[in-house]
Image (cartoon, rainbow over all chains, first blue to last red; front, side, top):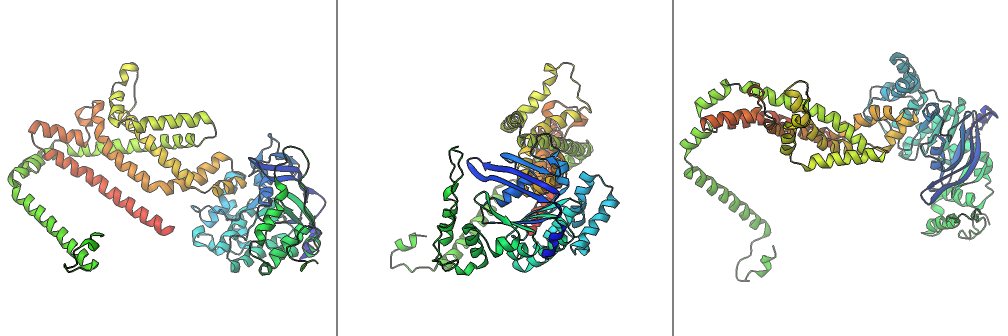
Length: 300
Length: 274
């Protein structure tokens, strides 16, 4: 599947320039700069609280960035004059909690956006909705209501709902994190298919295998920064930074933790430099090699 | 319960379950005694002639009970619709990001919830004094609808606001991320869900409105515009007999009991769905 990298062109779809976001005094993003290209599949990984979901939500302005620039398809969404609804219609979004509309049937979930935003007529909208429900393998559920579906089915409907708008790119915010383990596979295979068809995808995920197989590029975030990014074999297979290594070790070998409380210590350590710097302007120091908790048993 | 330990040791102690059983018997006994006393003391002939006099029942029906019944329903429904629309606007104002709207809505709601409805109606009846040229359409219905609706809206606004806030934030985010403008998201996604959540409490508001409609006589209505209470009271007063009022009371129950049954069923269904 790594061949999907061939879809990526050098055309920039999303340009992110020194993006910051603070909730009150709590700085969640501390200056993110990256580009996403047409056809590229970018997976963002990182510990909880690292700001990856906030980063994704800043891209379609579900969170208002504090400073910095986000340009989507040539439109600067951080500009006050930008018609954000128009930009959002072209950016599909899939949520961790699915967020299907419970009062609408599966088919209506997939048509309401087309009818209200794309102004398509009903027959056309339903035709496109059915095409996309078929893509996610749920055409037979079109009359069902979200409450009657399993989590995995709901998430696939959510993907079909987003695809029905015919977006230019898709944002996935931890799409499998709320699913029972046995339901994750179906959602991931839908996403794999989407990636192989050349969809531009920005995926916040904890699924390392997916990131490794499908992503063209993996971004590792921690403490509001991009710590490391590159092709998945490098970032996941051969991480350069200690923080990436620690995180991956914990994710890939969850039973290997030496002592209870180790995660708390790791968290405290990661965020030790995150205190507001009182406008001194200097970046907090990134501890790279102070992690001795594993007693060298790992990367010794 | 702690008295058990204080009992003298010589007395045979009852087990807790036996004691509970005896308590139940005692309660039945009290109930039976009260009933027997009430029945034997009451003068049944007198009671029947005041509350359920046959010719008065006929008289009450003949003088236009259906019209009064209809008026009560029309007053209530009109006021409910008006209150619902105005209440929704107030609820949206209370949740507005523009602070003055929030203040205005809060003030309105607190004002009309805090005042007895009867005071509002008295003031409303005297409104032509303040606005001499004032003409309210659909007289007398329009006047009643507005007076009753203004008060009802204050109560409904709080219910609707709670309903809107009960819709998860993710719903708005999902709608907005499809490119829906905020107004469309509210209309198509939030409000339908909010109203589904608050149908039971809103039906309760409807029941309250049915009863509050008994206050509109204060607006000074002509005879064929009387609602049930005023109608029944008028006949009761002229005949010094309570039968017409009792019938009016039954008519209210005829409206409100099915409604509360509907509410109970809706609540049960909602509980099951959750």
